[in-house]
Length: 255
Image 1: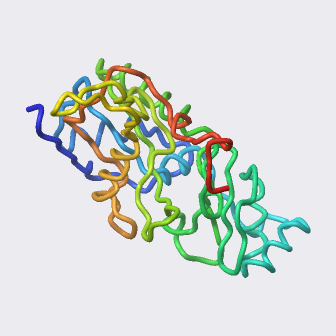
Image 2 (image 1 turned 60 degrees about the vertical axis):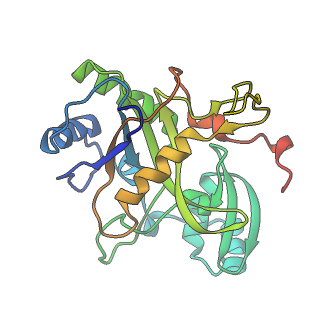
């Protein structure tokens, strides 16, 4: 049906470790669901499992903070070692105050702490671990798409999502940080509305819409549902990338 969208959190997804084969895990989850993969389906993966599989975990006791990291720690009240890892992954500091460190990452995302997270990273023990974003989430999405196409013969889309806050609005939502096989943006300019008026400025953040919808099932705490299968998403046949979403700095009126 062209007016129905179905989202399914894949069952029996294990705790992901460095080097795990995410494509094989997705295929097992689809079998357990059970879902037969089809052309036009979209698979949404939580950033954490992609980062873990790619070995992006950092043990804080192995980090030596620089003078700049110590300065940021004093300004924010955060662990200086944590601030050092943020420095590794950032292009520019946007805002700093007590309890807050907003930066632009090397990928272009403007977010808190360069997207580095402590939640759902590792069991609580004497070691403290944090998790960095994938080095190139678009590349990760492309690789997964190719693996699934080779294994299933199906042409699917991939979205890697993360949870970010938003300027001017309270509450965090799921956003896309890696995309393959679908447009990240759908440009509707020039299309007629119900009354024949041609749209002038409408560009839809398709990948972010998918990411946010999937995050409703994935959850934020102990749900353990990091992979979501989506069927029925309408999109044009264009291979996009999350980097399309990044607004050029000269077009950013708020920085």
